[in-house]
Amino acid sequence: MNYQQQEQMIKEGFPDLHTVILGDVMVDEYVTGKVTRISPEAPIPVFHYGSSQRIAGGASNVAHNVAKLGSSVSIMGVVGEDAAGQWLREHLQKAHVDTSGLLSEKCRPTTVKRRFATKSQQLLRVDMEDASPVSDAAAEKWLDLLEQKASRIQAVILSDYKKGVLASPDFIKEVLRICESHQIITAIDSKSPHIEAFAGAGFVKPNNLELEQAVGMKITDEASLDAAGKCYLQRSQAKALLVTRGAKGISVFEQGKERRDYPSNAAQVYDVTGAGDTVISTVTLCIACGMPLEEAAVLGNAAAEVVISKVGTVAVSATELLKKVKENR
Image (cartoon, helix red, strand yellow):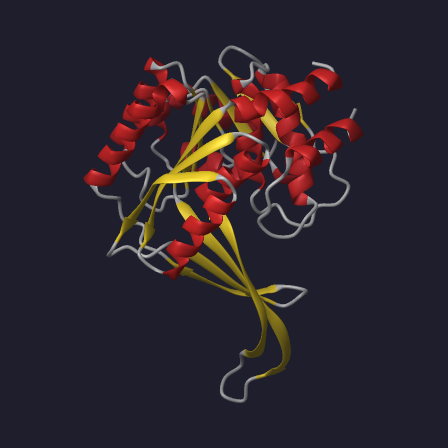
């Protein structure tokens, strides 16, 4: 595709899609302040509170990315009946995300990652979560919703942060079965070692560390990356594998093909947080519009370059993506 075709696809194709994000939603909270002295009570810094900010994280960041790129999107996940859960629901609705599949569980807190930081460095992260598997009732509700909406869905993204929504391999298999029967494109971003459940998925997107952990191989050079990627494909039986490698860009594996690498053009890397969410969002929408995987990976890389040049969890807009694509020509 030339630039004009890419521009048309992003401006006209993305809005025609409906994408479902199923996975572990969470809230990323950033508390910033100053440290000017050490406490006399213990050898710890005294943190003077300045301000705090909440951002949609995890699967909800994927949904935010998809919405900001212009696609219609629904979220399926679980929150607690608490202030963080209420904030997340309202925040996603304001971002034009359908939250009818966002279920509340009374005894389960909304996953919150609270980071305390000064301008120069992060001091502490406090996680509030219950990572136990979700109830069978919740899983059945999501499967019913998928079946009901299947005729209007073009893509489903599974976003697994090991917080309980996608803990069951059988549940993942059933989601993929429904999608295959309705010719819905599927993409998976998972930290799970149960990769055999991904058979038939359109593509899976681990980062370097997640790839290592899934196949039990240490990646130290190009040869070990090749071996790990091929092992992952063979065991998972997914159609393709996209490995996000931070500042090194993306490596693509497909059954019966040699690995292809797409280096990053980012001039400055400030923060890779959320880059994987941006990549899977962009690549999925591109494939759903009929773009070949190789070209979709290039656009996914361009989107990631925008994100890693900023600090914190951010979503890339269609305008920012087009600008970066034009710069990279």
